[in-house]
Length: 251
Image 1 (cartoon, one colour):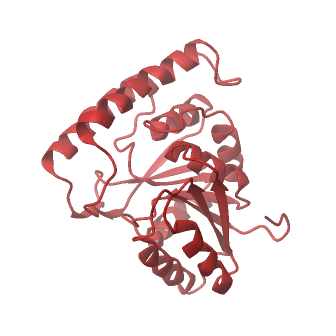
Image 2 (tube, one colour):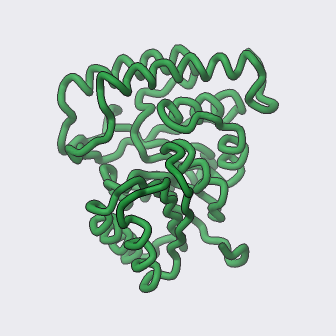
């Protein structure tokens, strides 16, 4: 990737077998590019060892949209690892990561801009606070498990946020490097880890209400993956106690 002409915004999108969704992803990027006075931006797709045609579709898209880049992992390393790769190779003043399914549309980033211009270094989308709108809800059991996870994640991280898992989070370039260069969790609870690191490193976390819709298709297997996510919360505390996060304040 080029190092000159750094964009204002980098949009990092992790991919794992997203072939069926990518047409909607590309359309969302085109809509964002058409917004009047939109920031100069780049898109960094990180293909996390997909076995379908995801990478080929992105390469085709790049031919007609030069501000798009593709980074590929040779094998599947986990969503957290893909996000970390993208955030550290991104060049933007601000670096947003989001899901390929566009559960939160890219244009919702516009709501972040006032906080970022005011100096916020970590802004995260929130589906639960006043002003947020959920167009299509998750099944009640997933919502209940999400509430329990949030409570436990706050207990272990001290981050004090009400939505850990909305896949729409933005960081200044400085915060992105400081946080993601220290992160180690590659799969479940990577969101909690990065917010834990942000909190420990002294970055205020600004929550912004967003419009969100459940897309109905998920790879999360509730009864198998949820225990792993909860276990990773313990791992965050263990890593901190053992000093595996480089140079963070102890509490």
